[in-house]
Image (cartoon, rainbow, N blue to C red):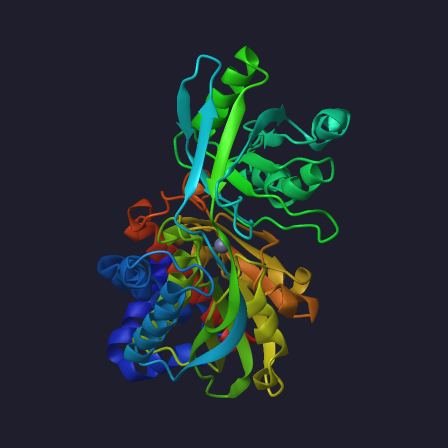
Length: 466
Ligand SMILES: [Zn+2]
């Protein structure tokens, strides 16, 4: 069947090339074979050239892009220059006021054993944490394994450093589900412990891996409870600390961190688009977030999401496909500290004349695609099902409800349909928010496949509507 289609397609292609080429700008449903053929050709070139990885290096190699930092400002310029160079129809920055937290120079945790020895733990401050007093703080450590246990031990917490030693559940096959269950200790642990008089918290890093790298991430204070410093500890060191505590329940830990808030600054979301030829005001949005944590270049989180959005547009343009509706890449600022960029984008005056039909956010790393998740009802799934055969060579095994992301959630709340190309994520938390999230952990073919799928899906919906 496929062979027959391709033979037929080849005949048309070579005999009436200009006519055949322009068909992609028409109704895909009626020219499905034509679109399938062109998608295949586009993907062959994409896989040979692996330009997504080149874009990743441009965006990520200079380093982390912590919201509000000078490094994030430089990334905004780099992304703008890159999309301008690629010749997109419109490239612009939309300014966003963001809060600015900085890690500071000092992050030190020393365990003092009974025999007088000192052992350094690998820690990092959690994003948004206050620092310790300049001279540090020292206290006994109380290990807990759940919020329930924290409640049971509340009488013993006053004046202590609470150590939340809660591993991500290895029995859970979905890494994001395991992360979702463990991460409240990172986000809310400090205030939960401070309620009972804790002076600081240490939180086991959010990863399945046992290693020496601490993983940072956002923590949030309850404004009605005193703020205390919060740090993540590497998994190997969490295990070691737990052993030491069994030997000496009165073991002391000294902690010194000089992180803290700086005044807000103006940053920006970066937009680049291929403007629709027939309905330019109708938007298919491809999203990633340009900010990252500061411990690494954030190659998977989320330079990869920005890269595949840009590369999808580049592939569409290079293939000569001319979208009916606008396909727009938006590199959002400030996902990691709560989504300021996404909220600003959705409510900006520039949106008044626009209608967002579909928003696809990529924020699950640069791995090879395994499925397509779409939210907003059966209709969009049914429509996407028509792409199943075209997408399957690129790893899409299923199309089902789901997807979305922090940056596009304000659009979703307003009724925009949404989704994500879902990549393989079993190794994602090995790198996530740590010094290990380097470009070398992204494979050029895998990230290219993500961009190919995104190009096909976004172009399809730009032609067909929703
Ligand atoms: Zn992210």
